Image 1 (cartoon, rainbow over the protein chains, first blue to last red):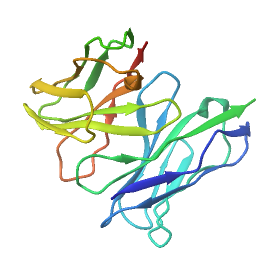
Image 2 (cartoon, chains in turn cyan, orange):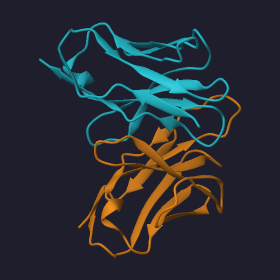
Image 3 (cartoon, each protein chain N blue to C red):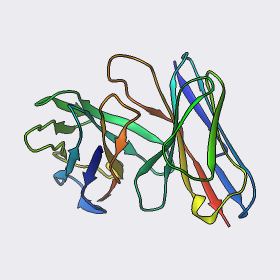
Image 4 (cartoon, rainbow over the protein chains, first blue to last red):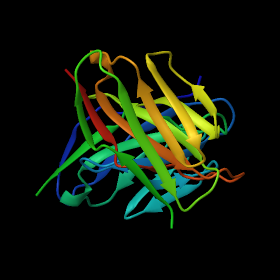
Length: 111
Length: 114
């Protein structure tokens, strides 16, 4: 079945550091890929998405490129801020059922 | 604009007691509706989804049930809670579309079963 694997957290960085959160997937067919963010005590919000191979999703300084050859969708940001501290979820959608989420990666940014 | 309301925000219930969590969506019609659970330190687990009134698909066998009595209302229930039912419950909706539409989540209900 479909599955998403994310790097375990927490990831702890200093402000202005470079961020990478790895995400790989297994799916039948050609899924659409998403990153969601969950701030403390809140639900999830869509951060960015990519619907086909080599697409790059971007939002709020975050980027992720859909790599079909490596079945990956790694999240990157060049300079993190304290306000980026949250849990980040990678997800895929194949048109069946609902989104399949990874286990989430907690990011802690220290001033 | 569309909004999603989920309540209560927090709930503490004893083992064996019943449960009812409600979710309503405003500003859209005939959405797909979802219940997810996020256990401590774990990812999101899809519990139920619904594509229309009275249509419920269950993803995980358990002592929870869901109902959709109205187009924009989704209810999660249990007759007798277990300790393992503790977690963060999230309701979500998306439009039914041929395009890839994002999920919109409520703020969640934190359930503690004691």
